[in-house]
Length: 282
Image (cartoon, rainbow, N blue to C red; front, top):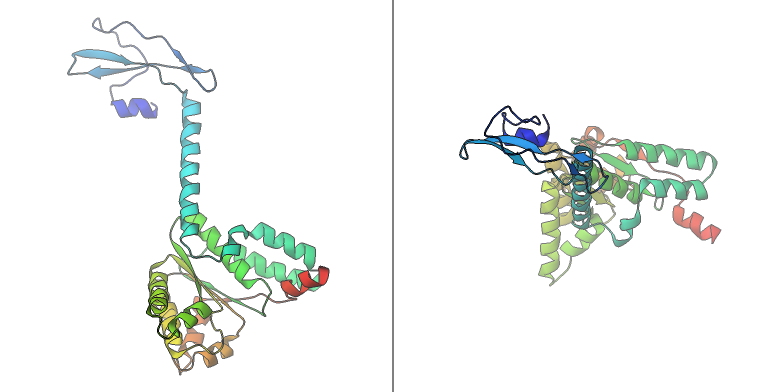
């Protein structure tokens, strides 16, 4: 029994029942897409007092299933595009993909530098957790942000749930803006949205000279997401000791750095700076 006959009821059948009150049988139709045969349907209409035929559908079963799958794919793609648009990604991130990042590394890097970067690329690409994140650590220019954003985009596609990109320096600057209440409101709204989002990327997480208010807000964001079992991707050039030092006003006992050990395993993104390599090849 196919989907249409199931919808019409358990009495539905493709065979004309032996009933003298049946109307004349409707002939088979032709699928408007592939030219195949489409069959009419018969059902029992109690109100009308007998069996009734339904005109053949425009599409055969195979083309109908293909059309449904195509519609689902379009709906999924559109939903993903909407999630990406609302994630607050940098403008240049619209073109970032794991494939393009790997191609750029293969073009610019060699030897152990390339091998080390590929290990980090593979860890970021394979990350799929719903309950813990990653700490992408390494020098400036090594592609940490690119890997984090690509992981975020992959997560959005798989989970079809909201995600968010947050720049710690932007939040810090907004919270420190004097006589700019709208900037402070934007930062607080972004951090509040980050607590509820399915996945959050915090770029330049442990940037130097963070204001005490920004330190407290970022520590609270990570602690809340950890307690709720929500994943977070942190991007930083600081190791755990430096993280503890840079958040000492909001976290004087260094608990944050210890909690990150099991909540956000470290992925080292090291090697030559892509910016330097691109400038050298120009």
